[in-house]
Amino acid sequence: MGDRKNKLEARVEVCPVETTLDVIGGKWKAIILFHLIDGPKRFSEFRRLYPGLTQFMLTLQLRELERDGMIHREVYKQVPPKVEYSLTEFGMTLTPIILDMKKWGITYKNRVDDIRQQAAVQEKGDKEDQ
Image (tube, rainbow, N blue to C red; front, side):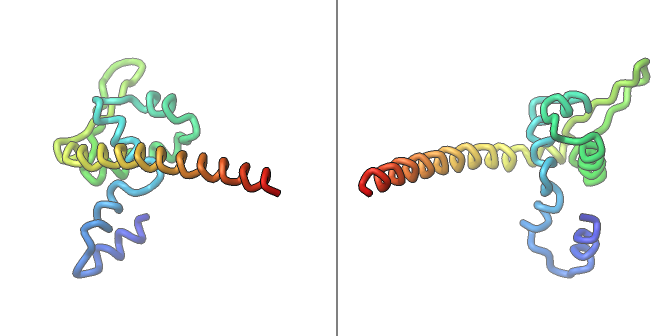
């Protein structure tokens, strides 16, 4: 990802969509941002929400989002240590985009489910005709 960002910075004219995808792209960043819309989350909360998300990948994604100014990392001086992640004011500007992605995802999933169901019915009918 860093190599792509370096190439992006070297170009004079950059597509704004490409810039947006560089910030929220990747398998986990938009999902992390989506869950932070509801409020601060701890590292362990993300791990519980997505057991398939490795500690290494979660750390990497959180660091990149923090570096890009999308999230804030708050370290509380207590024992055991407590760290919370939240959206920055600038990160909150992504909320409408993330919520539109959620809405589109629901629509897409429903449409694909309908298409697959119709295909299964059609396939069953074709087999009965043989």
